[in-house]
Amino acid sequence: MRVRPRETPRWTLTELAAELDAVATAEAIITGISLNTKDLEPGDLYAALQGANSHGAAYVGVARDLGATAVLTDPEGAAIVTGLPMIVVDDPRGVLAELSSTFYERPSDAFTTIGITGTQGKTTTTYLAEAALGDRRSAVVGTIGTRIGRVPAASTLTTPEAPQLQALFAVMREEGVELCAMEVSSHALVKGRVDGFTFDVGVFLNLGRDHLDFHKDLEDYFLAKAALFTPEHARHAVINIDDPHGRRLRELTPLPVTTFSTDGNPADWRAVNIRPHRLGTDLEVLGPDELAIDLSVPLPGVFNVSNALSVIAALAQAGYDPKDLAAGIASSTGVPGRMERVDAGQVFTAIVDYAHKPDAVTAVLTALRPVTAGRLIMVIGAGGDRDHGKRPLMGEAAARHADVVIVTDDNPRTESAASIRAAVMEGAAVGPGLAIEVPGRREAIAHAVQMAHLGDTVVVAGKGHERGQEIKGVVHPFDDREVLVELIGESA
Ligand SMILES: CC(=O)N[C@H]1[C@@H](OP(=O)(O)OP(=O)(O)OC[C@H]2O[C@@H](n3ccc(=O)[nH]c3=O)[C@H](O)[C@@H]2O)O[C@H](CO)[C@@H](O)[C@@H]1O[C@H](C)C(=O)N[C@@H](C)C(=O)N[C@H](CCC(=O)O)C(=O)O
Ligand SMILES: Nc1ncnc2c1ncn2[C@@H]1O[C@H](COP(=O)(O)OP(=O)(O)OP(=O)(O)O)[C@@H](O)[C@H]1O
Image 1: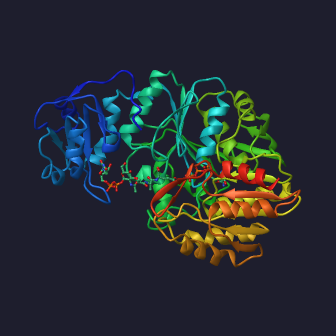
Image 2 (image 1 turned 90 degrees about the vertical axis):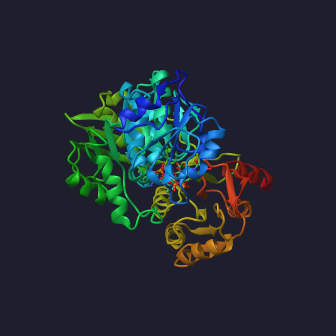
Image 3 (image 1 turned 90 degrees about the horizontal axis):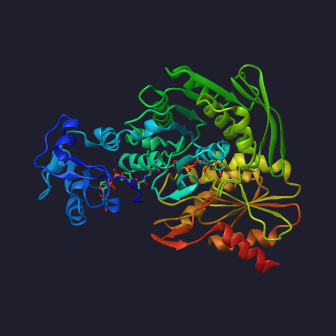
């Protein structure tokens, strides 16, 4: 959370105010920017913004105690702030990204930036981009965190807030990164987290139902994502035209477009001769200028072919040789918690996967069906304090495509686990898969392990790489992979 460049910038508050055509109420020295006291460091300008829960100005006392030297806020905040010099503007969130980029002297100009958006596959695609670059120095930013030259660097949110993101970019510049592949959430686009710089390439993967607790409807969600494909945010668009919203976006965007397809649609980059196998997929990639290359994607699921093809299209656009990229992708060691196989000597196949949206559940089960000789058994739930409408849809997607659905808890947060399970069960009741409700995630995984035979595939869906379950507001350590290994060991 406190990743900052080694070389500390030093601005006066007056200089920063001048960047905003504003005035400082008094002088101060600024060596960092933060909009949350949780990652504030001495010398920071604390951006006190109006939020959904509170006004950041309410935390100015905390910020001062932690060593903040000044505050950026709006007139409402200015009425609350005492004891620190201020810059007051009408819309501090609107200027924060540009200010953060200026503060670190536009660090992202030093490398190529690829922004990836879509309901599913963002994390996987960033990791495939990292693999595609082989030994070249790259960075990824996303849900699992940030990696710079393959070394983890802490970050919060899928797309960090601008002060944190620009500090990460400054570290990437110091580390000699040549390309950063980052996830761009719809929240980030709405909240201006990726303002203040322009992606060299924006990638659109797909759009399905999600985040309808934040966006008013699917159209609002689509338009939020479409904002990435405007000159303000990106120079070039790479679009999946197998997705209906991708086809719409191709018509909407004013950017130059490169298209890709794994589904036989006419596109600049196409996947043909697709041969799925137990560990991944082999295929041929046809590109511009009659280019044809063999590609082996070492992640199960044909949807991962689409993710890999987007990487080749985007990185080729950025000037990389597609043949080198294909070789890099073939050497990928996988993505934590995404179609991750767990082998503890069991006779069945066990997979941990981050599917926590109905379309992902369908995609995963559809991909595993042709390579599963026996039954598909899925352990599934739905998160608490998020989009309630998604819950029955999760159960339904699982029951339509799995033989056995074990409905259990998946991070209920502050909600009643039983009522979330009931909503998921309601959807799962449509069948044809057999639906069983098992309270307790460990107990549910144990149930799956006990019932699995040779040839079956057990998919533990949901929390994927994450290391804890929040129950009644308290986080309990829980790792699906570790629990699977333990339970397989106990059942041997
Ligand atoms: C909806 C949303 O994006 N909310 C984010 C937003 O909250 P907010 O503006 O409503 O802030 P608030 O909680 O009212 O607090 C007001 C202000 O006081 C500050 N504060 C608050 C408490 C404190 O102790 N100290 C402090 O300084 C906050 O930083 C904020 O500026 O600004 C906060 C500060 O950065 C974020 O932590 C918060 O993300 C919350 C935790 C969140 O859950 N966001 C999710 C929905 C999100 O952004 N997800 C996307 C997509 C993920 C995906 O693809 O699945 C992501 O990019 O991660
Ligand atoms: N292109 C795709 N199409 C459909 N489903 C996919 C695709 N790629 C991955 N998935 C499924 O979605 C799950 C989440 O994948 P991933 O973490 O890469 O997506 P994400 O967009 O980063 O999700 P989030 O925003 O929730 O972090 C995977 O575990 C897999 O089940």
